[in-house]
Image 1: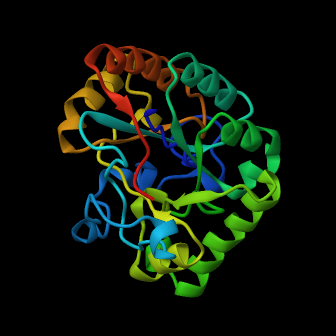
Image 2 (image 1 turned 180 degrees about the horizontal axis):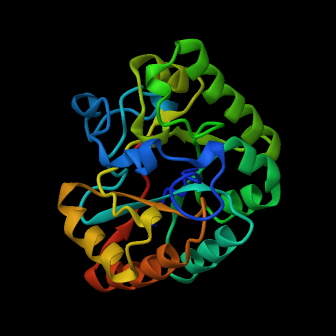
Length: 254
């Protein structure tokens, strides 16, 4: 099956034209902290939403396909400059990804949402304002961030399925996970975070992904949130390496 890159909407991660919606707390990417709910990870097996009629509110990190597989996720887009380049690259390698999109970016780039879905990738809700401290705020605020973004993505995509919800910086709460699940979106975590948003160098990004894959299959990278040239070049090298190493491209369990 195809490798999943979650291009989820981490648009606000690092460099470039940061807005208030794209800033990191203290100038750091909160993905570095342990994702809340780490003890609440789903079993690798179990019924899917079509079988159970419900979406699991636990944080997904496992692949739908077992074995030697990788899930690619791309955050903080869609971006009018970078997302098309990432889509072309993924098509070249017959790889699939999860695009974690911010509501306003989806609204600004509806044609890219259609292209993402039509190419066989999956959409993920990454909130409206990419507030990495939303887990410290009232449940009503968390709910509004999730559902307002969902409405924006629904309108921009023509109602295409939103498979996942990724909290900015991993700022999940039991309540936000339940809200997402109740609206058909599986909470989405990650195992591998190369901090590509910090632009540490192409080789550093590649090495970090290769070394961290022992933790699990779901890789967090970015197609939005600033200049993503290093992320693009790193993914280009990684896709070649994945192919050479016999990895299959999969999606996180939904």
